[in-house]
Image 1 (cartoon, rainbow, N blue to C red):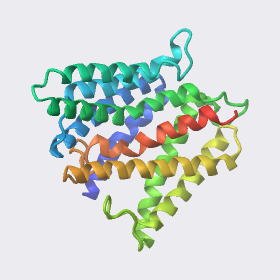
Image 2: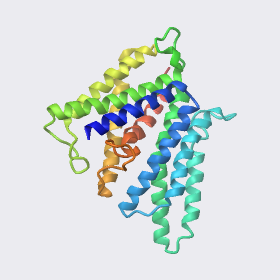
Image 3: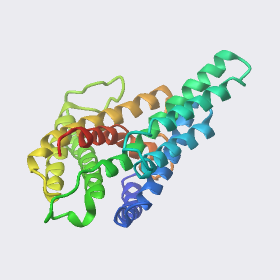
Image 4: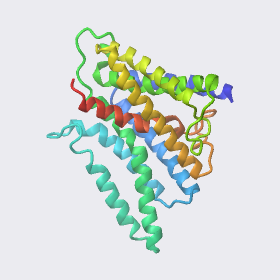
Length: 281
């Protein structure tokens, strides 16, 4: 298992790094593709949990939400947030219209609800491109200024989430005794939680310092991203438990499915995007 995980990481990490360095629109296309794969796995889990849905349509809608998140800032006369709600609204209307054709109204309504959940849940990845668009300008002389504001704040997100996951695993294995929310995920410990938060704060502070901002900002950013990443992981665990599944899929050997890899980002991306949009620059 460990050999598979290392081999998969050795293949995937350089691809992710290359796409990150290429910038937009490559990042936007990559996130949309990831959303489509994660959505397909989500609908498979819903089906195993005996929830009805329209999987193909829901998968397309999830990817469309990411495309909308990337395109909205460039639309004339709109801000970053102004037109984004139109896509899920229209998507839900179409899903509701499709549900009318299901013979049993109870099944049709269930399919409408299931489709809406699956698409909007994975569609939270749309806030990754929204974060890039909402990022404040970098001050002159920033060490990571070559990345630009958008990729710089995306690096904050990626670094904080990955560091939270890594430190939580290490601290949980080394010091974990007391567990929390065992009915959702029996492996989560308080030691892992606090260790993960510490790691997220440190990495967020380092990246923010490289972006020319105060490293002290790493405290609120690291805590917000770390806690939301943990919530995202637990939310997917709840879905997998409902479906009686260990992983969301077998797409990535040793790592499970795509949803298993991005579950933390589903909650962390909108939280960090909201922080960037609301906190004074």
